[in-house]
Image 1 (spheres, helix red, strand yellow):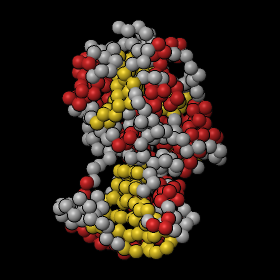
Image 2 (cartoon, one colour):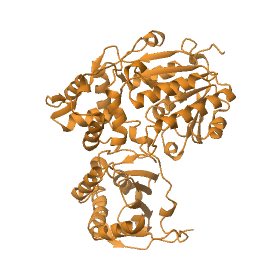
Image 3 (cartoon, one colour):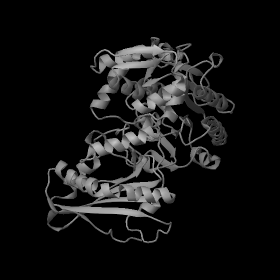
Image 4 (cartoon, helix red, strand yellow):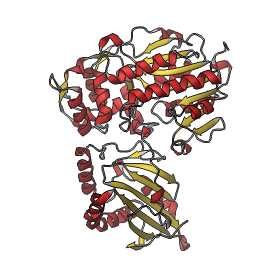
Length: 509
């Protein structure tokens, strides 16, 4: 075993879960520390536009943790690995079974590659306290990883407070939107949260640190608190009036998840396991790591304050929404004459603007979130509410940042498929639909310093209901889409030369 610490050596590190909330923040910090990083992701395009994506020591690998061969190949040449995978995914019916398979693939690959250490971020909570299904799964993953020959360092954390984390978003939206809250009894359950900056420092400090290899540590802020107090502190830090919180015994985790779904951006499928976990006491049983890796541990007030500052400054590095899947949409390529999959509907409109693409791009890339859709936002809000009631994501997710946009980012009930500055943006619909839909914007430079802004909506219906849906919303397109084009131009403070008008996209392929 190499006894050197990271301060004295630069190694190659494998990161599983690099597009997740913690992984997306850990990778650039590992690179800053001088380490080479191999990040295995299912959708490489989600990382390719990150500010650190072009780092010479970063290798982005397309792979799936559930595919043993791809994991074995990706881990080769590494000395250590971070395992940051949790399959709490609404598209996975049994996330616990998925987690088991992924963890077994990791230990097989780690042994064959001769890794010196696996670092796993798990959850706090004791098995004899009737843990929720989610916390049981996280504990079980740690136990599976420990069955392998490669020593495992396990960090057990409760709620992570940071801009963009799912738990913090639930807290934020509940307190922001509800001056009076009817809440479950678990609001008084003891917990020991931790700031995301402290988590990252612990993760990096454990890397090939002889004192941490093969050990399990509980990490959290110094004081024990509860969720009732967290809400009170958040309201104070956010400058909100006092919130009236009324705990009642009738709100089960299932009912709580539906309430969270309606009030916050977090869907019920994710909110339920989180709500179930909140009923378990999650406090540190020991604090050894605080002595091995000294740092200033933030209390809940400091962590909440820092998270709010990041949000106000539009510096949210990662968000819980980043974990969404980018579904392939080959059928959506504008003007593709070779697609032959059945009915395909299209609405294409354009305007010519007296400006260059670089002048219009800021307005295009800022669509959604606080900027809205530049026209008839009340109609978009109604559509978002309908989607939320039907179990969809609605408009609550907003945007991670209004200043930048990366593939994989959530934009309300859309997800970014592709973005190429300063001339192309494609969004895939994630609202409840009887089919698949994309909305794209293309900026085409013309002569005399003018630009053609193209807006193309495409819809692939599923069955007769999908076809009927398209014809039902068609009357609104002229009103909404034309208004959106004018709104984008107005937001850019430019003038329209011609349009809006319908057009036929150029054939490609």
